[in-house]
Image 1 (tube, one colour):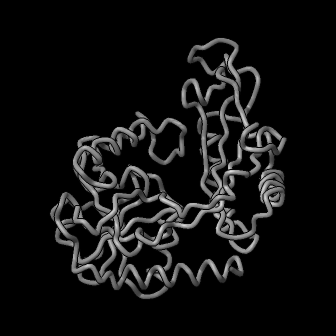
Image 2 (cartoon, one colour):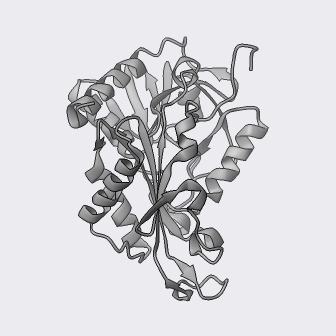
Length: 308
C-alpha cells in the first residue's frame, strides 16, 4: 500500500451525523437506536439462526424490491423460518420506518429476521418458541469516493465457498463466519478484502460481494453455483446482454483473473466497485472502461426504475 492509498472495505460509507439519531424497526415498533434491543436468548444472537437482506432507497422507492423480496422469502422458506408478514406488509413496514426517519434517498436498509427467542440456550430450532424477531436498520449511506477512485485490493485466501450441502452460499444467512474468516485472512495478507475460490479451485466471489473480470472486451463471472446470486450481479449480466457486451458465467482460474484487463465487484451498497489488485498484482492499467460503462448503465437503470 502506497502513501496515497487508503485501506477500506467495500461497505465504507461517508460519515453522516444523522445516523446517530435514527429510528429502528423492531418487531412492529419503531424506536430510537439507543432503545432498539433484542434478547440475549434470541436465536440470531445465540446461533446465527436467521436471514437478512440489503436494500437501497432512491427517491422514495426501494430499488429492485421484487427481486430482493423473492430472495429473502425463498431463503426463509428454505430454512423453515416463518416471516410472519406478507410482502405487502413488509413493504409497508419498510416505508413506515423510512418515513419515521424522514428518509427518501441514498438510504441503505439491513432487513433481518431470526427464529426468535429461545426457551433454553441450545441449538434445536424447536426451542425458539417466541418469534420471529424482525429488525430493520435504515441508515443514510453513500459509498466513500475512494471505492471508485482507488479500487479494492484483494487477496486470495484459503477459506473457500463451500458445497450447497454444507451451507448453501445462496442463503443470506446470519451465519457469516465463513466469510468473516476469509476477510481476516485477507487483512492478514495486507489486502482490503478476500477473493474466495470454490471447492474446485475456480475463482468464485469475495467475502462480501460478487466478482467479475473483463478480458478482451468480455465480461466473466463465476457460474453462480457456489456464491450468493446477487441482485446487482444479475442486473449487470442483464445490462451486458442488453447492450451487446459479451458476458459469460463460467469456471475460470486465478490465471485468467491475474491477466484480466479489469475486475470489479457488485453489490447493493457499492453497485460496481473496481478492483485495483489481486495478491499484489495490479489489474489492468487502472482505466476501467467497461466497468465505467456498466456503472453508467446501472445508474440509468436505477433512474428508470426509481425516478432518482
